[in-house]
Amino acid sequence: MAIEQLTLTGPLIRLALSESGFVFDPVSGQSFTVNDTGLEILRSLQHDANLGTTLELLTDKYDASQQEIERDIDDFLATLKEQVGI
Amino acid sequence: MKSTDKLSSTLSEKKSWTKPIISPVRSGIQNKFGGALYSNWQDTIDGVVINELLEQYGSPLFVVSEKKLRKNMRHINRVFSARYPDVLFGWSYKTNYLGAVCNLLHQEGAWAEVVSDFEYEKARNLGVPGNKIIFNGPYKTRDSLIVAINDKARIHIDNIDELHTLEDLGIELDRDIKVAIRVNFETGYTEPWSRFGFNLESGQAMNAVWRIAASKHLKLVGLHSHIGTFILEPQAYAVQTRTLCEFMNKVESSTDFEIEFIDIGGGFASLNSLQGIYLPPEQIVPSIEQYADAICSVMLDHTEQRVARGGKRPQLVLETGRAIVDDAEALVSSVISTNRLPDGRKALVMDAGVNLLFTAFWYNHQVIPTRTLDGRAEETVIYGPLCMNIDVLRASIMLPPVKVGDSLIFSPAGAYNNTQWLQFIHYRPNIVMVHDKQQVSVIRKAENLEVVIAQERLPQHLAKPFK
Image 1: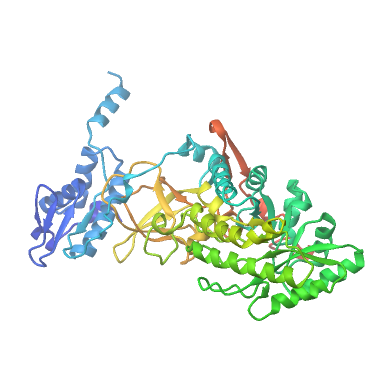
Image 2: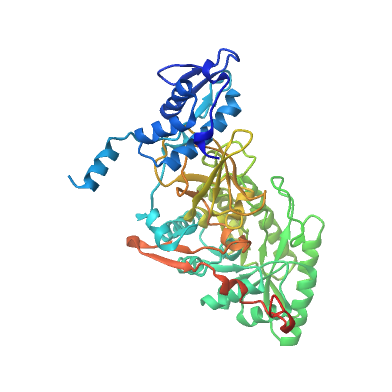
């Protein structure tokens, strides 16, 4: 599945993000912590809701290959789905 | 500026990528042992860079440290010899019968302790003289007993049928045979291994002694027992040694036999973590000194009168395997893929599984990365490469994100892996030994197709797959 074709909708937009990586879901009341790259992905998705754009942004900014970043985003989204219900 | 310079300049401006992670904040659930397990990592073994070893010898790779193995053997020898005047170690071949490992331990003074025809032949093949072999085990063939009699090996009788066979052989060969008997009894600490040897409480052991006393050719010179494996309570050995010494006195007072040695077998725990035990091995595994104190103090007390009568203390024989070799060997394995399980846990698939690290069935091995791992640790399952659901190296471990190609060290792996491993689905890999001054030798070559099919024979009508 090409990551560019994926888009996210739903409760992602409602998450409150802090600079330090603290994430709060006002609907469930749950809190989470994310690392720097996780925060960057959440911010990008809240802004654009397009995974292709997010991948491009991260590939430009970080020193890993597009393939590695794509794999890691996939993994991150799987965790997000499991834990946050997105 | 050259294009390559430009490229490296652009790359260096980029930020370092770490795997993105999200984890829930839970109140009320705290880990009192803390979560920062992976601040440690290890990129060398005895000064040799692990990644260079993998490049040269392939992954996965077993690595034995000569330095550590010699150190362990010398340490245990010193500890026991400092507490008792006559101590002998029999190297338990079944624990690790790699030729290089066995000969290293023989060089350090250990005899060979074998439990089958194969192990007996292997010891002889390595150059161990027959009179330095302890022949144990419940199944010794008649032919191997003949060889052992001729070699003057120490034969430990396991059962009444073996006793009769030896008696027959004594008559047939017209030879006097010095033997030991294996006995079993309740120590109150471990489940008795009553299937091996003659039972003490029921009188079976004393009957065996009478049977030997009635024989023209057999002479009882030793008593042997083995109370179990991975025994965490040194007092179990104190009870075992006391029981054997008391039995020795009974035998000597009822017969003309003089017991020359008492063999207490093995079973000392290593610094490995048994599944189901909550505390880490550093906290629950007794030191060699603790085992030695428990055993030697009883041996000294119970043989004092012998010395007073002008006699000699019996030799104390130990067949320690695991505690000597386990932490002298590690398995280095590489990540071949990563996955996310439906329940949210991280999964790693390694190039080594339970086919190679057989002890993963009962240990939670220590897992150390060969580089620093950035990022927060998360619950991870480590799988092997077999197409089997049971192929799990660690069912649950907190591990920071790792990449495909990263390598992990599984240790201790020196005991019971290179003897119980399986040629199943994959070839078995190289085993190297790191010597002094960072010298490395292959001590067992990786298998290939030729090795695996060497013993197969194709009937003529099945010589071709298709007609």
